[in-house]
Image (cartoon, rainbow over all chains, first blue to last red; front, side, top):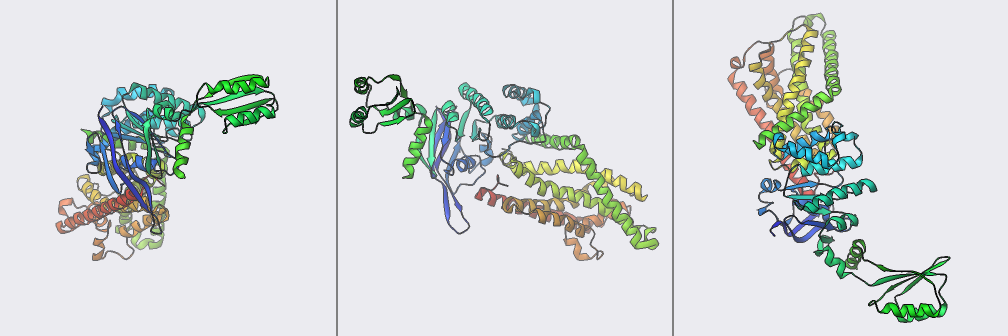
Length: 319
Length: 259
């Protein structure tokens, strides 16, 4: 599949007041294929927003190249801007005194689309984002969630090849965040947009993205498919839930076998967390539990989640 | 075609603001008119019977006030307007237009000029009705002259808008400058030849010659008209270049979205 977005050694240094320079983005390279949905992850200050704003032409990189659909964005910014729209973090991105439809028409015009040409699409967006009832309400009177949906619609109405979404669900309540995720998922599933999305919210990324790029301290540390990452970090972690307390001797025997095993207890329950090399080691644990006639309430297998994977990688980087 | 779409979008937005927030529009007209009344009756009282009846000065106040209203709005569109866009986070969206921020701004200027002209006409008629001095409204001569004169104010607006992008806390400077515009238009020391190098001054004088002196554009001294063209091109161009300079600084430092 063809590449529509490519960064080559993108670097951005910010000069601080005392003459020090901060490397916000440090030789970042990656590419995104047509209709791919890629998540950009990283802790605060890792360089996600700077990277996105460089692609959007809002920050001038110190060095490196940005290619959008075969166009070198830094040399031909206007041509490049025909191919990219962005929903930026921490901004309203929309005009508060205009209604949803007026906003959509304005942003279509900003892209050079005539109202006649996009009217059908605007109707579609209003439908998709459930804005019909609020069609005549100025944006400032909409709920935070509605405003964010409208902002996303305003980025979509530009009908660009590439869509950049910087923290699209930040500051939304659980319900609206879920709703927005649902729309994004739908869009991703339709596979008609190339999306680069940055988020703190692992649910969003896990839900929507096929691939993740993790950046830390301005550098790419991981660039892989979500499924591969899951496999890489797959551990045979089990949790045993037991009735009552574990005998002292039992605990000693278990720890002898599995040094990393953890035992925790509440009033009536005991929990054992253990990483087992393979499923057959389960019998050894069960054997020990059987000897004490311990009642087992449940045995669970823990799936890795993206959040843990992310934290493991980033912490590993910090050391 | 794409540029036309952009132009239409800008005009439509101004029109919606004017109509939906008609109370804002109305209160602006009323405020300007009240300030005018204050100046007008102040001047009448100050100058007493000697000058008040005789004409030129009071008519001059009407003309000067009209230019000031226009200049204020022109200046505000770019300076306060830029700050507002930065605050609401739409400035970055404007920057991402594939037609270029230059066209986006030029069309904004054009759209605002059209809308402002409507407001100024209302204020002007109110002023003429109050003073009973009906001035020569030769639109064919006045339109280009006003456009040229106000271009200087747009230039200053660009300059301040650029400053605001980088330095952020320029609100008080913006306010002070609104009154500096008055000095350009109606310097208290009368007309000096050196003033034609300032923005707005020469233009106001030529507009006065049309509205009070009842001359047409073609009857004005060609040298002065040419000088006005040069003066306006200079201030508008300089303001725009300085704006572009600050815009580059803002893009380099990543300041476009912050306010």
